[in-house]
Image (cartoon, rainbow, N blue to C red):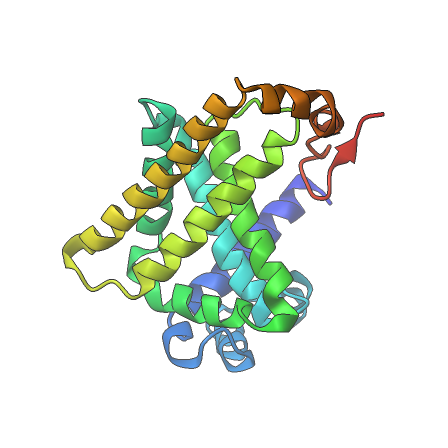
Length: 228
């Protein structure tokens, strides 16, 4: 695909997505929203079908991944310690969709369905990976996975809390996020202390040696690889 064609496709994808945002609060991520968005955007139906082969599911995913790309562009601006930057990153990801809460709610409903749960999990994982990568994570073993799995849990639970939060400026959500991050940091500190015990040293000799051979995927996509 040439650069001009890729740019044309990106513009068309964004045009359909932007047009869809008017209809999602009323019709959800549905075929009706898809039909109206294509008509409103002026994008050729054949091109729209190629860009969103699964229709509304791919449209909802495009909404999520566009937010992740916007987050990735913003992350280099962050300063401070790692805990503060992770908290700010999660919070900013919510701020990016603050005026589109109903679209997020409808997406959460869609990806809760068994036939779309894998897509939803991948989307959340991508957000966690975007944050860790943007913050310069250098993990090159099984910790690459555990960090993203933990942050995925924090992010998804925070989103669900945020969806039901009616407090001014979502202050209750911010407190909830702070508590979740504090819980994670307590676990990490506890793990660090346990690594100094005889039991941990025995683990490193046995199962730990096996885990140390696990490497992040190349390119960065599941399921990863194992070094012999």
